[in-house]
Image (tube, each protein chain N blue to C red):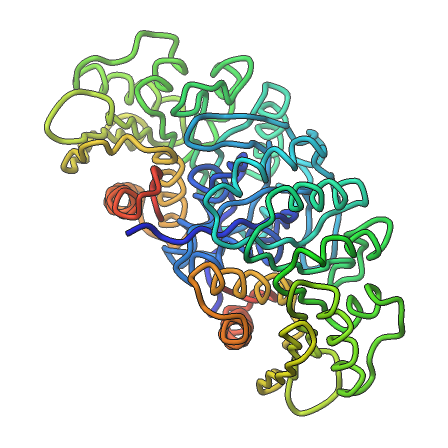
Length: 255
Length: 255
């Protein structure tokens, strides 16, 4: 019996807390074989992003072409610039992956720009995605509106994004005030709304959270888990990973 | 209590079977937090190496500088070319890492050149290494001699390499004929010879074996395990990983 395979298309973060390292650790923890297509190499530590070098477009696409064969799920993270984003979108259009998770990375948690040219270049890719997983700022950037300030606005923005995908949008509300960390999943093309709640962890807004969450969804989809259950499992996994990371003193989630 | 940290300085392999992916999976499986400094991005599958793009020297060094701080062990793998090898050697000379494992990668298991300019550029780095982990072909290339054909010759070459390091050389003999897969570890600067035996696994000459072995040694050293025990644990871990990979139908070791 062969293990399911997931492919991450993302940048590398030298601290190991985000990007392909977080994705590969998450895939492994969830029993999935991880492949990788690197879009950019970065030097990062807890103080911020010190260097970013995009990979040439041809090599990004070549990695995807050879690594997507046989993969049961794909995840897209940092794409660095508009040229890479367009070429990755074109490659995915040719591949037509069944289980594509798009994490629309625009900035690092420290504020550094991780996608030059802005979120608009990601819009064509959304039509290929099983689910897109923005945080509040990323959802607003994709839609060209102000960030949601209430749960109703979160659900509205998730619905608008779900209509642009093949199926679903999960908007993470970790930055909204409240006793719980609530994410909203709108699926079935906008018709089904599911709130995912977890106890708010004090100081839990850690480097790499979005990478781990989207990688965990991709891993669950690769194993054949349905979308709503995959998002629930991924949210639980990420909450536990945040607690592990804090317990280990890493300043990052710890899959 | 914080988790020990290990840093891999190596290339990425899109198949996830070798390079930084194999290293990060190995570190995670052994309970160590993995960081990474990418030297080159490659597109690979079971048919071979389809593309190699070296990272610019400045960004390689910047990743090492930010990621080596606080790391308890470092591992060096694919360095792509002489310019990167020299700069990594210079950076390591400034850092003076306590637990440095050098895997002198020259060619892929499919025969592709992964170090332009040959093995000589790795020689200055050996003086910084706690242990160097060549296979038979790499040991011969480092020493400028023919590959060992007998166990006596393996031990001689390991002794010669141990004299060039701060301590030890582990020459892996997976390609020598015999009922067992025997590796020889020469430590204490050349004075102590330890044979590490494991049952030979039919068809077990898999992609990524050397990466997993050297990463497992680094992980054990990061946890404070002594050198000989670290090499023993790493050999057992790698044998089990080869069996897991074959059982999973991956054509790669499976940490």
